[in-house]
Amino acid sequence: MDSHAFFTVWILTAIGSCLCQDRAVGEDVEFRLINPPPAPPFIINWYFEGSLICSASAGSVIGVNPSYEGRASLDPNTTTLELRSLALNDTGEYTLRVTMIVGDAEKEWKTTLRVFERISSVTLEANQTELVEFNSSVTLTCSASGSSPSFQWFNNSAEVTGSDRVLLDNRTLTVLNVTRYDNGPYRCNASNIVSFEMSSDVTLTIAYGPDSAIVTVKSEYYSSGDNVTLNCSSESSPAAQLQWALNGTLLDEKGPELRLDPALTSKSGGYSCWAYNSKTQRYKLSSPASITVLERVSDPAITIAGSPDPLIAGKSSVSLTCEAKGSNITRKWMKNGETLSPESGRITFSDDNRTVSISSVQKEDRGEYKCQVSNPISIAEGSGTLIVNYGPEKVKIKGQEAVEFGQQIHLSCSAESVPDCTYTWTLNGTYKIGTGASFFKENSTYEDSGIYTCTAWNSITKETNKTDLELSVKGNACSYNRYLSSVTHYDSNFQFLDRAVLA
Ligand SMILES: *[C@@H]1O[C@H](CO)[C@@H](O)[C@H](O)[C@H]1NC(C)=O
Ligand SMILES: *[C@@H]1O[C@H](CO)[C@@H](O)[C@H](O)[C@H]1NC(C)=O
Ligand SMILES: *[C@@H]1O[C@H](CO)[C@@H](O)[C@H](O)[C@H]1NC(C)=O
Ligand SMILES: *[C@@H]1O[C@H](CO)[C@@H](O)[C@H](O)[C@H]1NC(C)=O
Ligand SMILES: *[C@@H]1O[C@H](CO)[C@@H](O)[C@H](O)[C@H]1NC(C)=O
Ligand SMILES: *[C@@H]1O[C@H](CO)[C@@H](O)[C@H](O)[C@H]1NC(C)=O
Ligand SMILES: *[C@@H]1O[C@H](CO)[C@@H](O)[C@H](O)[C@H]1NC(C)=O
Ligand SMILES: *[C@@H]1O[C@H](CO)[C@@H](O)[C@H](O)[C@H]1NC(C)=O
Ligand SMILES: *[C@@H]1O[C@H](CO)[C@@H](O)[C@H](O)[C@H]1NC(C)=O
Ligand SMILES: *[C@@H]1O[C@H](CO)[C@@H](O)[C@H](O)[C@H]1NC(C)=O
Ligand SMILES: *[C@@H]1O[C@H](CO)[C@@H](O)[C@H](O)[C@H]1NC(C)=O
Ligand SMILES: *[C@@H]1O[C@H](CO)[C@@H](O)[C@H](O)[C@H]1NC(C)=O
Image 1 (cartoon, rainbow, N blue to C red):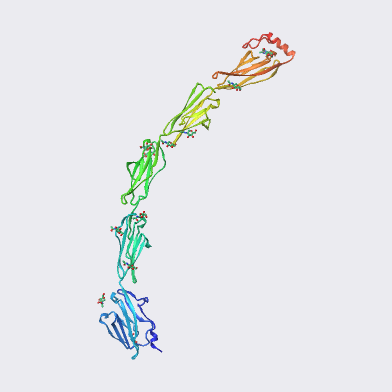
Image 2: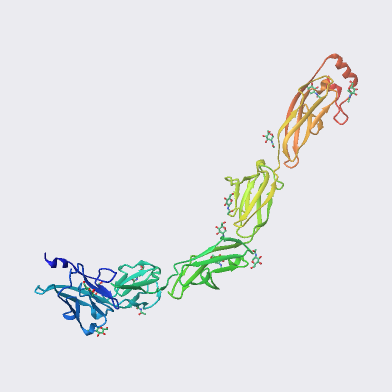
């Protein structure tokens, strides 16, 4: 059996650690055959880059190069070499040559060790930290001590990857044309095969804005004397300087709040706000917020002017005028609780609704008129009554058409009229027999038969209107005789009736 079969694998391993061939400065390394020889070899020689480190023969170390004195140990039984306190210049090729038994051919194995300096003193620096959005570029440089560091970049814990704006070049990170979101914090991780170290954070200050300026106010309309507060906001870093303007003219007032204490009508107008960022040297002007300060409406009153006066249906015209105090008043008319609208030809409104003119007044126009005055902050109502004189019309007599001889006659007359009319009664078109709304006669006679006319008269319109009722007195001789003996004449107030008339 070939004794060399034991030396199938040749590797390096550190004591109690991994099977890797990379070490940090100061560490130890052990070169060991996976399958140690069954007996101490006859000759063992260890070389580094061609120069001898140490030798052993038949179970005894026979020599160590003085430059390895104290930090190299060779096990003559197993061929294992231990090197301690490695330095950078220990990097290189190691060769083991072994002659197992006298007369055997020499056998050789090689491996490579790399010794690295640990990463330390990792620092991150930006060439500038005060930046202006869309204007600045920044270069971050990561420095580290140690062998062959490679660099990894993080922005707020997320690894940075390159783009057309973000350039990565090992130890530098360049962000072109920064935006407000590029502020970091940035850190870099420097590493080599044996160690790594993270830098401390670098945060960039990126001035931006103002994006816009916005004026906010609770309402557009205010009552004179109210306290009005306007607010201006602007997205900006650092905070923008704010200044107010009225109708485009700069005011002295600065800051996010403008108070009008108290609001006066003269302070009405369009309020806007300028926002200026001294770092970016950019500004924005808000769109104006309109503020209208009004006097409350008060003392609404309707005046009525008619011609001829008093008003007579069909003859008079009238105008109703609504006056009130306050600013920017709008008016609305109502009649008997309903909105009044112009009526072609007859009822017209002035442009501002101040005056309602009625050209030919009708009785339907009478009633309660209201004028609602308002502005955006207040409302009030004035009222007036329009009296339209008319009539009399629809004259009616209520009463009997036939009565028994001697029975009472009771008639009453009514008419529609404003003002109330007066009534006159006549019989057979000739005889005035009474006044007042009712006619009464205690004991009827045959002469009381006939046509009763009620004439109604309106003292304002000077109009009359009348209606008739035909009434007949019926009866027998008995009652007639009694009548003859009793009747002399009609009520003394009335016109005397000669008995001959009855004959
Ligand atoms: C080598 O082996 C011999 C016997 O097998 C033993 O006595 C000796 O101590 C060993 N040497 C070392 C350095 O282990
Ligand atoms: C290797 O480096 C160590 C310390 O860094 C030094 O003392 C030693 O002389 C160097 N050896 C050689 C061969 O240059
Ligand atoms: C910077 O970025 C802004 C917005 O992305 C763009 O409008 C502007 O043109 C860019 N400026 C330069 C110099 O690239
Ligand atoms: C920092 O680096 C950026 C990008 O290279 C460059 O544009 C900028 O001028 C540099 N700033 C300073 C202060 O050197
Ligand atoms: C950066 O690293 C890459 C490989 O990762 C290398 O090709 C390049 O030369 C390095 N550049 C610098 C400036 O070190
Ligand atoms: C307006 O503000 C003043 C104090 O600034 C206060 O005394 C006054 O009562 C306020 N007026 C109204 C109407 O709120
Ligand atoms: C601002 O302009 C409005 C509309 O032109 C005007 O009514 C108002 O009086 C102006 N305000 C001032 C204070 O000039
Ligand atoms: C008056 O009020 C109306 C709305 O009610 C408004 O459209 C108009 O602009 C106001 N006029 C003034 C001078 O404020
Ligand atoms: C006039 O009154 C009508 C309703 O009768 C109303 O719709 C209109 O807005 C008013 N106009 C003015 C200027 O007040
Ligand atoms: C008289 O009465 C009739 C019927 O009721 C009416 O049509 C007419 O207009 C009235 N005359 C006057 C003057 O009112
Ligand atoms: C009506 O007749 C009665 C008796 O029939 C009589 O007592 C009365 O006085 C008469 N009245 C008048 C007003 O004539
Ligand atoms: C009225 O006329 C009727 C019928 O024509 C007659 O019977 C009556 O006597 C008359 N009355 C008077 C007071 O003339």
